Image (cartoon, rainbow, N blue to C red; front, side, top):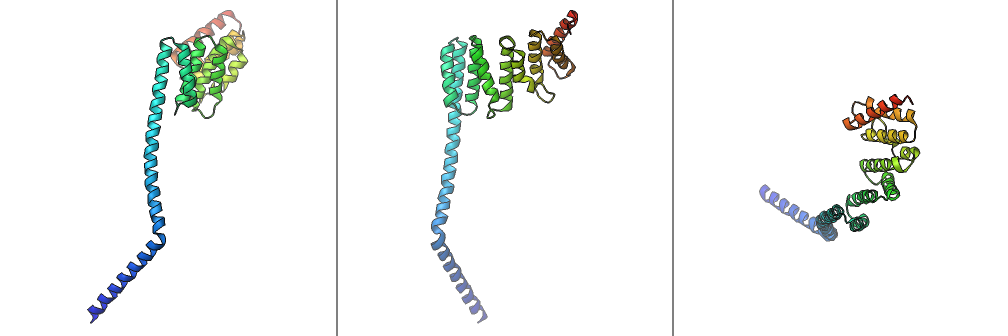
Length: 222
């Protein structure tokens, strides 16, 4: 009798659980299906986005390489047109690389003012990685050594000439050369001395700085 009672209770419990599950499904089944569909769509969307991202980057890369080939073939105008288009419609880091290359081609063509303006614009764009911004500032500064004033060079790179910046050596050289060209030998000596005193200065930059320090010392002007 006890066994019969236990069997009956189990059957009742099973029915209750079944009825509860049916009630839950009747009430929430549509939502559950909707969530499942969203998960599937989300997965499909993610895969699709990854494919689009990869193909877009690949396409931009092909365009960039084609533009570089045009530049190597001295087809500057065609290269500039392709790079300018890539600036507007490129994907990933390629628009920034195109900007840098456009400025470089402008400098090579003797369009110094346009090149300086382009490099300076990149240097001020906070959306661009800091290393690329700093490199663009240095390019502008080196062009300004001949085409601008010490103040213009300073506005581009003096902020880089600090101990914690990896590009401080080149920044100091640009500042020293600009000061030397302007006839401010005391300021030039200060910048060149900072290069020589920095044990991490690249050998080439250090040798040039030491040479100019020797020239300044021999003239007795600082």
